[in-house]
Image 1: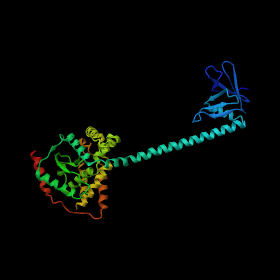
Image 2: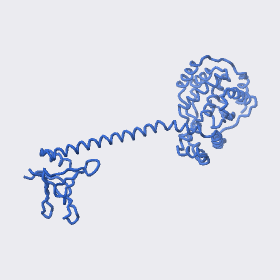
Image 3: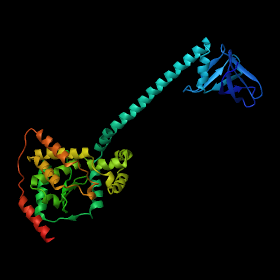
Image 4: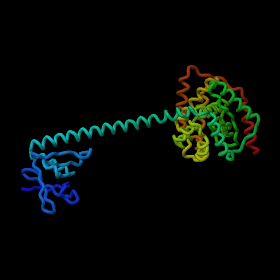
Length: 373
């Protein structure tokens, strides 16, 4: 007595097309199907041979003693129904197929795990490889990038010309530079800018812009030294070129390693005008703060003056202006103050030398300029 019908395909040499869709029936003795032409094809349970014909085990082949035809199906319920017949030949074959499918699934999970693990390791290694690649690039590239940046922003700022103040700020730079190692041969230069914003920033290569607002809102030369040392940290740690390279892509780094810097500089000129992709990361800001503390300490200055500057900036509600966001995005004042104080506490001995700079005269000159501008 015939039961439920299962979809399948009959492959037979007698058929004109070699195959046709059929409905497979289960009987008490085996499986069978009748074509539209009325021809009966059947296979006994005792003779049936079951095989997977594709790696996932979703499609299987049913054949028998007569090799001139066989059935193919993807209906798993057909196998389950055949298995319930209890025929030893069928039961053993289906058990073998199920074991093979489980082994295949296990291998797939292992392979997937290996692939995922590889990409996780690669993702974690990218920053290390990236920084290693940057370290191999010549410093001249930073200087060239700084020149590109200068062209982009030179019309944005009004130079501040006061020889006394310029010489005083240059003296701070000289004292900080004296404590750099022999490998840090960066060509630092300070440009004073007439701007009431309390800020300073550095271009790759060593040019540092100091705003008159920073000088006016600082109570000592040591506070300004902390800010200048911070900007020196961005240059020394090559944060500018790293941020631009990350924006442009890893491929450009490979080209740079082979000496092709022209394409990089052309792309850099475009990205330097895009505020959203050229902000320093907060980890880079913290690294620059650490460099500032170290340079001040080596110069015999108390790094606490740097944190005092941020206390005052916090009280005044000062932030980096929008048009400078492409150069720097600072962490919160509270976070920076706490981190700087922790670094100062870890120093073996707090230095307390003062810079021999007439800060009162600097303030007087700034006030006079402010009154008569």
